[in-house]
Every structure is written in C-alpha cells, then in structure tokens.
Length: 202
Figure 1 (cartoon, rainbow, N blue to C red):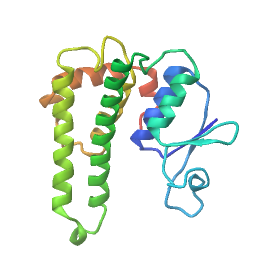
Figure 2 (cartoon, helix red, strand yellow):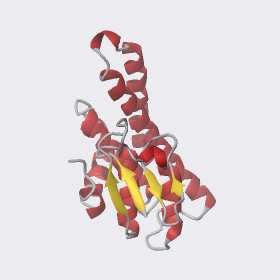
Figure 3 (cartoon, one colour):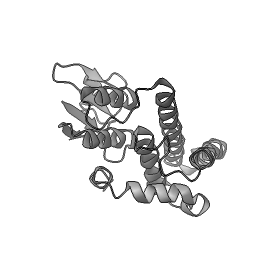
Figure 4 (cartoon, rainbow, N blue to C red):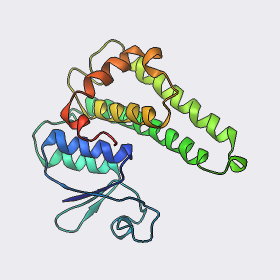
C-alpha cells in the first residue's frame, strides 16, 4: 500500500496515526504541492486531495473517514472503532466534530493567504466561531473523563488530538489549554504516544 500525504495535513496525519497504532506497514509518499502539475494525486483521486491510499491491487481510497474505516477492519490488532453500533456512532461523531474543526481552521488559513485587500473578514469570523464552538463542545462532552468516547483510547481521541495539534500549528494565538484544561490533559497524554510523536509536522 502507498499513502499520499502533504506534510501538514491533519487528515493525512490521522491516517498515519491509525497505521502506526494498528501496526500496518505502508509506504508514505509526501507530495510537496497538490497544486503542482506534476502532483501524482489526481491520477488516483479525482478530487486531487490527501490523504489518498493506493491499495496493492490498484484500488484507491479517499478521504480519511473511508481510509481509517478500511484500516481498522484490515486487522483485529488494536481495534480503534467500536463494533457496538451506539458506541461506534459516538466515536464517529467525535471524528466528525474534530474534522469539522480542521475544516474551519483550513478555511481561515486559505482566506488569510489571499491578498489583504481580497480577504473577507466575515468569512474568517464565521469560521473562527466554528472553531470556538467545536472546542467548547469537545470540552463539555469530555468532562473529566480520561478519553473522549468511553474508557479506551479510540479513533475519537486520534481525531481530537490531530485537530488540536493543527490549531496549535495554524492558530497559536488561541490559548485553548487555559480555557479548556481537560482538553489540555488529553493532548498531553496523546503527544507522548509514539504514533503522535512520529507523525508530528516538522
């Protein structure tokens, strides 16, 4: 298998952590620029986005939600998505919330890359409101528990950890650890795991 990623994509990092936690061997190809004409990704993903997973039989999978589901079922080692339907739904809801926060943060980053006179402050404001609501919901739902969705480490924790790391990377001015100390405790626990250390953006 081969996984196409970009260096700072939170969605690709989620898949890389899943691979590490599941102990699945996979070639990683870093794509410097998805916009470059020579990018290999569109040949396997018509959306031209990462992560894209190329299977050994030539089948390609995208996006991260599909890929992590495939990987969790590929081997019974360290199951990270519960089989119980209700518990599974809660874990996937956490994933959706974390991915949505990343979506909002990415939208802010892209808007701020436009020329100053072309930037829309209302777009930035709306997306930042989403980031704030996501952080509040994560903190409220987690409460004083050790993990986000039950008594065991799961895809929910991976997704939240990756999203918080992306906020740190792109929006360091947000002091979420001070405002939401339970998320800070979770994140401190997560970044000690080898899977998080080995996939941290350079």
